Length: 398
Image (cartoon, rainbow, N blue to C red):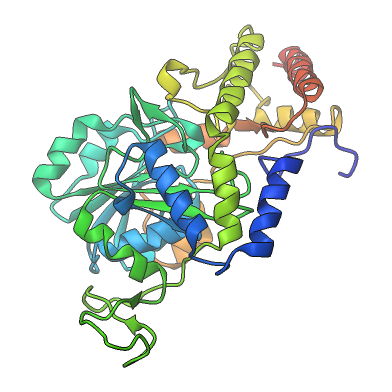
C-alpha cells in the first residue's frame, strides 16, 4: 500500500546535515578506507560506554558475524548442545547449527517475552556447551541466578544484545554479564552503521586476542623481528585455533564514522523510545485485552520495539486489529518472531522441535507497532488515536 500514513520503516534513524558533513570528510580523506583510525576510535568509545576493556571488544560486519566468531571460539563439536530461545530472530541460532551443534529450544517467560530461566535450567544436560540469552525487544533478561552454576559446569553464556544496546541492569550494561556478547548496528537497530554492522565482546582476554585474525582472513604479524618490512612478505596469515579457518567480517571507516556519530546520540535516542513507550502504554491502559512488558526501571527496557499481546476472544484476534489499522487507518504493524522450530529451514536441517508453550501462545497473538525514533509527534499521536479507535471497535464484536 503506497498511501500509508505510518509505514513499518526499514530504518530507525535519520542523519542530520552535521552528521553527513562529518561522514563526507571520512569519505574524502580516510586512508585507508577500512580498518583505520575510525575503527579504533569506534571500538574505544564503545568499550568506554559499555564499561569494558577495549581489548575485549571488536567491531565486525554484523551481530550474526559476531555469533559466527563466537561459535568458532567455542570449538563446538557434533553433539554439543546449545540452548537457544525459540522466540528470536533466526541469526541467534544459525551460527551454532552450522557447526553441527544440537539446538535445544528454550521457552520464554510470558510476561517478559524473553528467556524463561527456569525452563533453561530444566534443559541443561551434561552435553550443554553454551546458553544463548537474547535480550529481545530491548528488554534485559535477568539470568544472574544461573551464572555461578554455569561457571561450575563450564557452560558458556552468550548474550545476544542485537536489540538491547544501552539496556542493562543496575549500573551494568547488557552484554557485560556473560562470557560472550554480540551487538547489532543493522538499519533498524538502536544505532546503525549505515545499514549493517556489529560488535563482539569476549570476556576471556586470551580468546578475545584471536578476534582480529578471525575477522580479517587470519592477517597477523610475523612472530619474529624483521630487518626489512617486505621480507618474507608484507604480512602474515596464521591462526592458533585448531582446524579453524578465519572469516572476512570487517567494517569500513565510513561505517565506523557513522557508529561514532550514532553512539554519541544513543542515550538520548533511547530516552525518546522509553518516553514514547510509557505514553503509549499509559494511553492504552484501559484496554486490558492488550498487554505490554511495562518495565521502566533502570533502563532495563529501552523499547527497541513496541510489542504487545492481544488477548483473543471468540473469533476476534490480533489479525483483526492489524487489518483495521492497515486498511482503515493506513498504519502498517508487524508480527515477531515466528517460532524458529516452525521454519522449514530448521526442519530440513534436522533441528528437532521441542514444545515451547509460551512461545507459541505469545507469537500467535502478538502485535508490534511501528516505533521508529524519527516518527513525528503528530504521527505518534495519530498512532495512539487509531489503536484506541480500533480496539474500541473490536470490543463491540468480542
